[in-house]
Image (cartoon, rainbow, N blue to C red; front, top):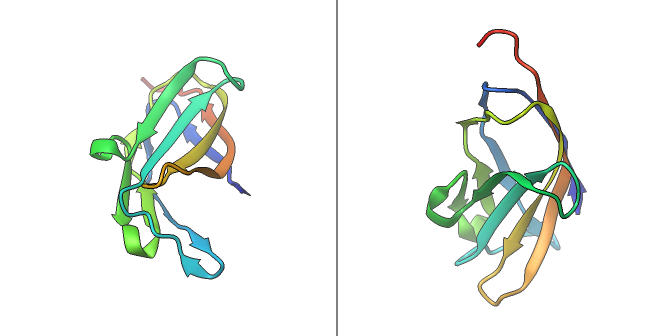
Length: 112
């Protein structure tokens, strides 16, 4: 599992972030997979932001055979705080793997 941290201003547009997942140097097949991401203040705590590849609700699988997906460009307008997150893939066979996790820091804004 990889660690990746993000920082964004409250209410600002978060730029899209592309990913390509490899397993043993080969692109991981994401065909019929579901990708999910949640932001929380603590493990098991309330969900402050939830994204999924189902209906491209915040995450889009770009090319499943090449193992590529992205977190979509979007405005993130949740309370300023340092959140934890992970990105989990549910494969067509039911296997679940977490591939990326880290901190997602939302900074307070001045201009509203």
